[in-house]
Length: 77
Image (cartoon, rainbow, N blue to C red; front, side, top):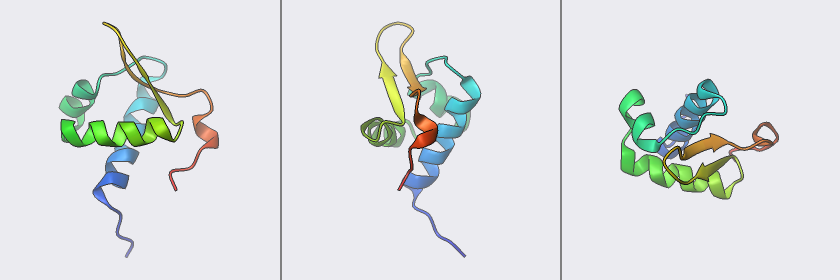
């Protein structure tokens, strides 16, 4: 049996959610409400994914997180 950390699990869930939303920026609060994932921990996960070039954050009223253009070429490891 393979054991994965909560951080990896939440990263995968966040990425799955963003894939389903397409190019629409989604706030972490919205992700948290719809998935039940802890908001504070999602913030930490999103920062790591942003540093890795997998997601990008958009500011403003219609801001949130979206997948980067080359996200498919990246790895979580």
